[in-house]
Image 1: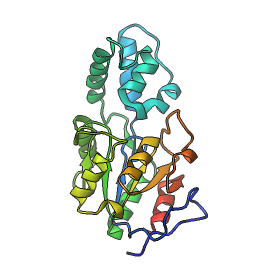
Image 2: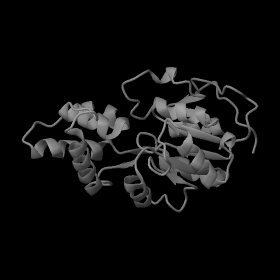
Image 3: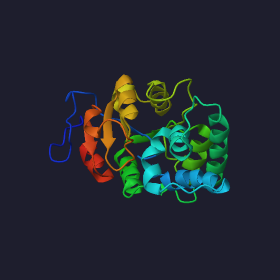
Image 4: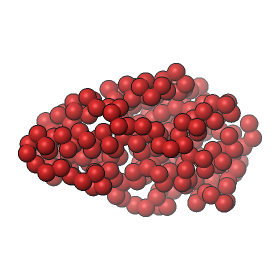
Length: 238
C-alpha cells in the first residue's frame, strides 16, 4: 500500500511527516469515536438520581463528560470527585447500572459501519483501544458484532496503564501484528492524541465525538482532523 498522503481539502492538520511508513492498521477509541454510548451512560446516571428522588440532569450536560467516565458523570450529577469518600460507592453503583443497559441505546455513529467494512476490503486491519474496562468493552464489541473482525480489543485494564499512556496502543499493535509506526490512532479526546503520539503512531482527531471540555480540538496536535468517517477514509486512501 502506498504511503498515506495529506488531504488539504478536508484535513485541518496535515501529517507531520509525509515519509512515514505505510499505514497497515487503524486503531480506534471506542466511546465517542466508534459508538455513541452517551445515551446509556447518561441513562445510568439519571437512574441513580431518580432512585434518590433527585432531578435528572439534562442529557446535554452529561454528553460532553462521557469521555471522563464515572469521574465525569458523577461529578456532574452529584458534585463529587474521586478524592471524596462517597465516590467509590457511587462509581460502583454507576458501573452496575450501566452494565445492565450496555447496549440499550448505544449504537455506532453514522458512517462507522461502512467505514469499518471499507477498511476490511482495503486490506487494512483495525482494532479498538479504549479506557473502558474489559468488563464493558468486550461485551460491547461482541454485542456489536466486532469481535471477529477486530484485530485487537484493548480495554483500560488490559495493560497496567490507561491512556494517555502509550501501553494500551502498543499492546493493540502487538496483537494486530503491526509495528506501531505503521498504525494510526483515531480518537475524540486530547488524551487519545497524546497516547498516539507517545506510541509513535499517526493520529486522527474526530469532530463527531464528545470532545470534552478542555482545549479545542485544533490544539491537540493531531496529524489530521476529520468531520466524518468518510473523510477519514479519504485521508487513508482506503
